[in-house]
Length: 156
Image (cartoon, rainbow, N blue to C red; front, side):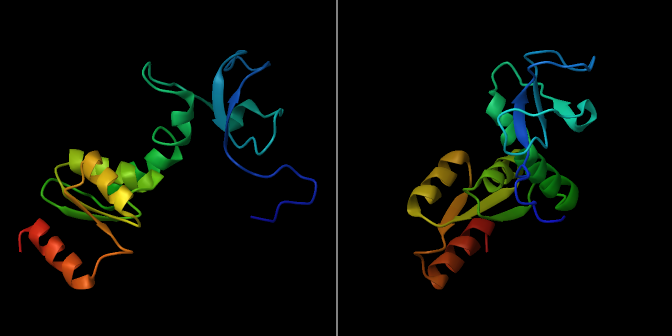
């Protein structure tokens, strides 16, 4: 991908509210996502947009996370590439991040044992609340302590 030209709109995915449309696919007020870039207003081809279907208990911003690229990365990476199934042992590096936290939850739903790795004690506690079987702070624990906790978690 070429660099962004000086004076051009910075590339990026965005959630947009349709102001007006000549397309039969969208009406004013619809929320869509697409490569609108960093702009307050834009004119975009209808074929480059996806209409958002937010669940009744969801928020529009969920399309930037669990209902968008973050969730899709976690879902397909774990299930299609990793082929995780019940009884597997899943170690998630960056487990307290956007994608990692979704990976942890999907792995648990699939019946796997999950070990989350994060960089602070607060994140470790949050990962346990999230449902990880255990979590480690890679910044503060010794290798021998980590190893014994991992072996205990997987039953060795």
